[in-house]
Image 1: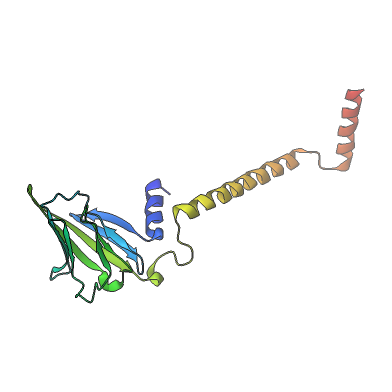
Image 2: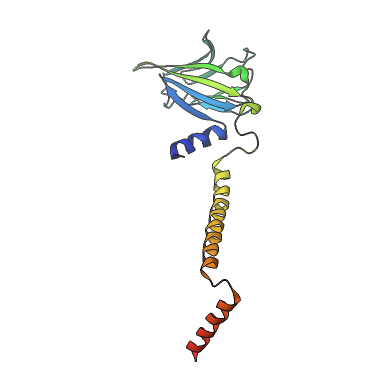
Length: 186
């Protein structure tokens, strides 16, 4: 298995991962978790950040002149949104499947306007590939010594089998071997 595939599997099994295609960053998250849609910018005093959701581009959050406005009247996002006043990043707490969809971030600065788009997919816990133990870096760190121990035991077993094949098998040959060694010592 290639290292890239292993990394992808770890991200999928740990619950959150992102992939960018055609300017839209895809983000997958498990239901009940929190996810942050990162802006990768630092807000200046006169910058304006506007977050919208869905096909109708419903306004859900905004920062203007370093004042944050979050639409708590929208029942889809009631008390789940949080915005970082330094970066404009949007955090959705206790995310649900109704929060799946397209999020757009419009960034108005003195240099111009830019956009970030995020396609968020929320999976129910029964839909994830790791239903029993999520594979996280901690779990991998704990599993690595066990894997090394198993491989070492297999190598040891194979070496012992090889050594046993090379020794004299019958008792008569063994006594001749012991007698030769005894005579060499005298």
